[in-house]
Image 1 (cartoon, rainbow, N blue to C red):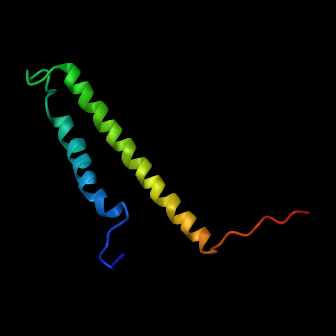
Image 2 (image 1 turned 90 degrees about the horizontal axis):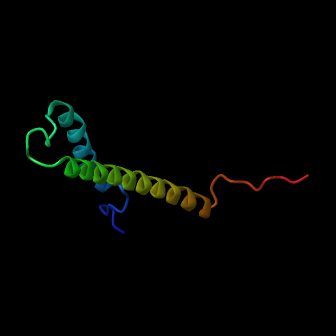
Length: 86
């Protein structure tokens, strides 16, 4: 693993964040595609479902990355003490 090696999610998160910001900004000002005759309402709902799934996948990946950092910290002996029994 070299100094320039991007193994964390942070290297891949920026493009998705940009897409999500675009969708949040562009969607309210755009007429619904089904009203413009471009696509059916079912296609719009399916696209919304896919966007939601992508957001959930991102959140889970971020959680897994943070859990990995905590596990690494613990494995290296950092911070946690066994609870005193008494």
